Length: 145
Image (cartoon, rainbow, N blue to C red):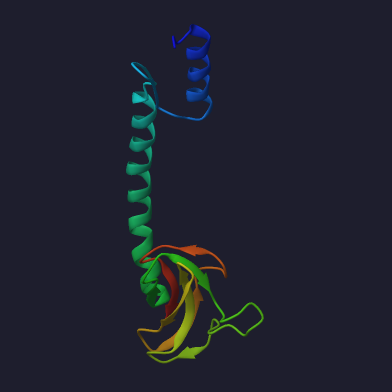
C-alpha cells in the first residue's frame, strides 16, 4: 500500500486537531511518522509560572500560618468530606474544640474512606476546603489554634 498525499494530509490534521506531537503508522514494509515541533510552546509556560508564584506565595504563607494556628494537612491525595455521609452532621465546625486523635474529616482515596484524626488539640479556626473537593498530599485542610 502506498501512502498518498491526501492520506498524509488527513494524518496531519489529526495531529493538529488532537494536540498530538507525533503519529507513527506502519503497514507491512512501509512506515510513516509525522512530528510537530513544540519548542516555543514548552519554554513559554515554564518561565512565567516559576518566577512569579514562588516569590508571591512564599512570603504570604508564613504570616498566614502564624495567625491561624497549626495546620492539619492531608496525608494523601483524595477527596475531602466533612461528614461521614451526605445527610450527617460534620465531624467538626469552625469554633469547635477538638482533642488529639479526634476524627476531623474523611479523605476518600481509591474508594477507601480514610478517617483523618487531629494531630493536635485546640479550637478549629478555619476549614480551608469544601465538601467534595479534591485535595493533594500535604494540602492544608484546616487550622487549629
